[in-house]
Image 1 (cartoon, rainbow, N blue to C red):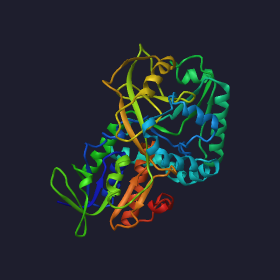
Image 2 (cartoon, rainbow, N blue to C red):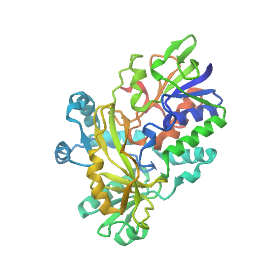
Image 3 (tube, helix red, strand yellow):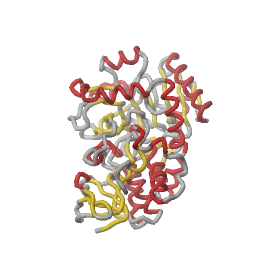
Image 4 (cartoon, helix red, strand yellow):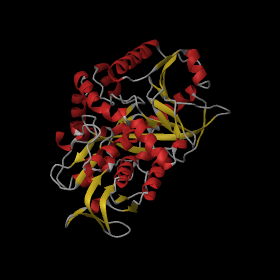
Length: 413
């Protein structure tokens, strides 16, 4: 079986790449060991984050480092046994997170973020999936004046530098927007431009449906079987071997299973995260995604119920689940919003693929013809899926890229 392009990885990034290539006349085979959207793309806070021009950085103040070092917080957790293995990545991540370097990274990140909402809206319209999108942005809530003042200063900076829209909500305005939240909250920040996703897995599947209507195909297969073939590449699938001139690696945190054997030693880390769904108590309704900024968890209204998501867990990618952050967050979240019974039999866990400079890897492999990369999106895979798909497909088909792809090239390391 032949295709023009094999896309390895059927998360939101890989699916978006496949759709954009198919729209440009390439015959695409989408390959993953799982059905589409059932990896890390399945569980997230469900936000297309237009405001996220500053990617999540490593703490730099000693106060914050010591707080995280106690390993008792909700926003971060780490596995002691994994620290020696994680240390080189964490050291580089810390280095890139200095104030000056982080500001420079934001300028490189902003062109991707600026287009995230319109690119999703375009694909969702074509896929008949606009009903899965929830306009109106998200809200960051506060319990203390000091924390709120600090985050308002950040929002003012983002507005000056990148024209990010925000609104400061006093307690009354917050209650009007979210009448079922804890009434002791002192205020909030509302970012109105981002778009919520009611069911991230359903959105990914809608894009898969669009791919198939455009003539693309998909198969269950093992990316580790990838090998060079005459005139291109070959991978084993349930439908038999598939060959193509070009291959895209969009395997997220598992991309090294392909890039490593090919000789690429790209620095990578992972941040694991958890979620659980709850039935709201009584007639309580959550209208926006809510971030408890001082505690480190989020609540998101989903089709299945209210989704509680945790921050980052630093551990080995394949280690057993340790959902301690979820256990710590749940009783606090129940004081913020009336959560009822759990709806999932066990906590879900996903693995975010991270680079030390917080920028994704998008572009051609330096040493292999026909090999392309699209991974390393960390917390913003859902946000940047269609943006990445458009950018990479333009590069692969010889179009002029709509933004400069140089900051995301693989050989920057």
